[in-house]
Amino acid sequence: MGVPGNWRWHGMYERYPDHQLCLVDGGGKLVAAANGLPVRWEGTASSLPSGSDEVLVRAVDDGPPERPDAVCMLSVSVDPAHRAVGHAERLLTEVRTRAADRCPRGVIIPVRPTRKPRYPLVPIEAYATWRRPDGRCFDPWLRTHLELGARQLGIAHRSLVIRQPVSRWEEFLGLRTFARAGDTRLPTKALVPLRVGDDGHGTYAEPNVWVHHPAGAP
Image 1 (cartoon, rainbow, N blue to C red):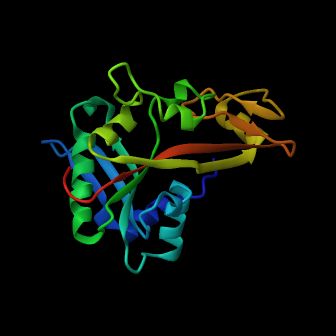
Image 2 (cartoon, rainbow, N blue to C red; image 1 turned 180 degrees about the horizontal axis):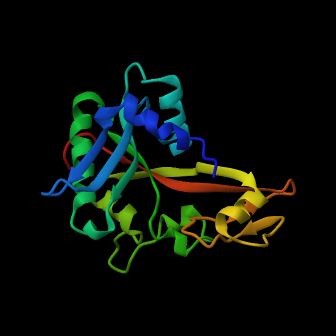
């Protein structure tokens, strides 16, 4: 499927190797990784990028910012067999520590809530406010960030956008028939429904939650 930033990921590794972190086990096997980019950011919610697509496209197409203020983390991934043991927290802490030297405004992240696919019809603004009975954030991944000292800044409504003809969606999803107009829930880990227009194209506009980690170890 066509995603604006997809083919630019290799450029991120080539141009910004210092912001690509890997965590390996004792045998040298990769168990977690974090991918980021240096960005210009004024420190306010209104000056945030539109989302991960914009950050990656700008960084690869325009080159490094002259004086980066922050690091934008686009992905933190952990091997399923090594989850819930603190690897994501270790990577986030390392990113914050490194940012203290060169990016005084710290780290911004368009967080993709891990439990949101269970509630695709709930607006992201409402979902991001959900709390457990103990007062902690409902979403596990968003909770991890907040409990490491991050603050929630706002919503990236169109952080990642995929627009394709309905026929391409049918092929990709293995469906024989598809709604020709309106919103359709996807049989995947999608955060929101697919919106099909009268022009025969379907658009998936994924929302993320912007958080800010101050520079330095939490």
